[in-house]
Length: 470
Image (tube, helix red, strand yellow):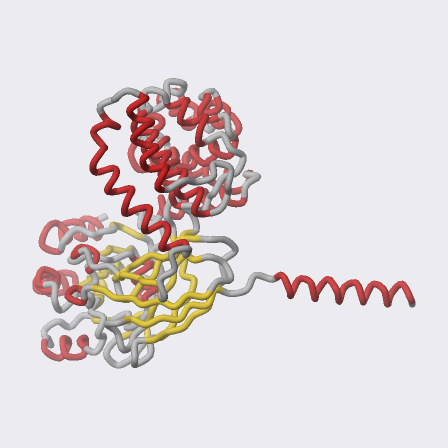
């Protein structure tokens, strides 16, 4: 009985300690200077190799433009903030509180293609704090770009090492860092310097590798480190390495060589002795080969990624390999089209499965994009030509969903289905439609036929004829 009581007391103490040291949420309050309704979204990058993102939170904007949200992050990370199709970025540190002011150029704010007009969210932390991470990184980046603009010729023209060191010291004196520190800012600055070193020491990659890529500590969540890693191993099998020929790799992968053998091939390169770096670069290389080299069997490349996801000792690599598989197969022919939740002007809800059994042409348009509206007249001909054998859905991407009601009533000759995502931004995330005109052709089983689809005026009807004849 006494032993049982001791056990209960011990468990109570352990729970109390866990509650005390549990990660506290990041508290964010802010104001959008340009908005009086709608929603603001927060995304985190699941990895910086594929730059895949996942939704962290979505919250309503009050009538006065204010909002509040709480996020939980285990470490300092770069977070993306979105309003409509306009985006901004912010570094967030665990357990801190932030007061934000968010502004933008409102000229393109209501457009789905706002990024094409260089429309961004400008995020300011209030009050200014020179010790705050975002302020420090912004100050560093401004001077870094100024420095690079003025001295880049010295890096490319192979000036003497003495001159080069003198130039770099100008930057280091203003922005010193502790080479052994693992805090986010020190690592960020360190690998921005690494990018300049890599430019200068192009013919001595080993020196750059020894200086920056031999550490057992890998700052996976640091965008500066991952950016440098991608630069250093860019086009790795196409000439960046003298230890591995693409033909050798092609032969081994296409004959289903096991994962350990492929890793051993890469391990012959002295710049890939680091086990963690080597596995990351294999994931990156598979992505490059899948997209850019038809000689490699794509199913074998995906098989290797699956093996990495299942066998790796590093949780971050499991995420990277899984993300890479999603990235490579997303919107590929014969892969499942993303589901959606859309509404018509009568507030009826539709999902992808509601259109199963027939070919579906998803057509995206907006009232401000003339070309996507002009396609309507060709789509009208398609409807007359194919009748009920082809289902057509036009999705209006104006952020004021009420416009769909007026559009449908003004164009009664367009008798196919018209839908809107309303405030469902998951649809935009799923289909990644940020430019118009745009369309997707989906087969009767809900699988992608073509993404993007051919234009209705430039080959789509011929493609559909071919599908029906087969």
